[in-house]
Image 1 (cartoon, rainbow, N blue to C red):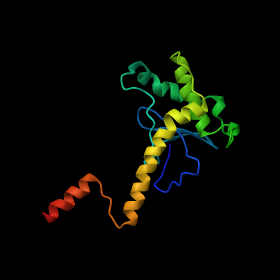
Image 2: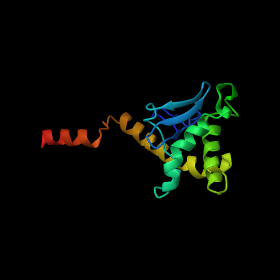
Image 3: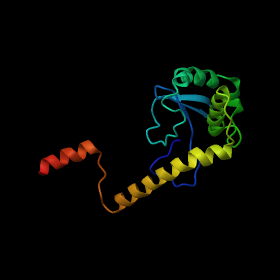
Image 4: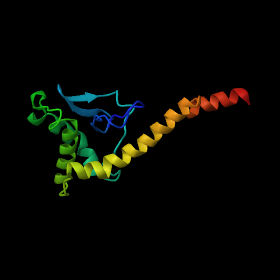
Length: 152
């Protein structure tokens, strides 16, 4: 889910599925996009356990085949009914079905996977905003070590 620092908690999030190389497949008005960048400020919802080698080995093939289906042509897109969330959830449910597992409803997937991750991200964003408002400077670990070594 693409979730930026300026996210207000009220607008819709954009959703995609990444392949094993980190390319994010996502469905928009122009069809399925494959983005190699632009998802740096996203919330990741892990779906595959690291020890599921057979699924991981087939993931990219499944994702590419799924994404080229007529179901995801641009003319089928509908902002409310057939969108990026439908795309991601349908893919997840196809993978679950291939494993003979129970599929997830939209509500169940949202409650079990999306809400916990967005709550955690929201806390981080709130903390980041407060630190910025309080005139603190946020630096990554490498920068702060370099700054500290200059003064001590």
